[in-house]
Length: 58
Image (cartoon, rainbow, N blue to C red; front, top):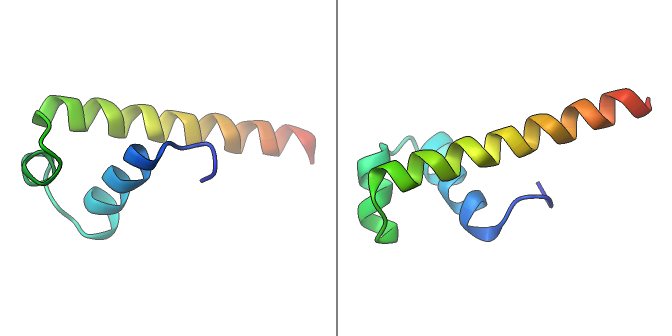
């Protein structure tokens, strides 16, 4: 999780843990819903890359 920006962490928490929609998160963070979705996508992609890299070193 240390590879994520504070904004990415916040969005993932609001979307995944709290279960808010992109529209609800957008209102909370003063962003567009599409910006929320893009930021979430990039955060998940970064986490996937980290998990793959960790798997290659073990």
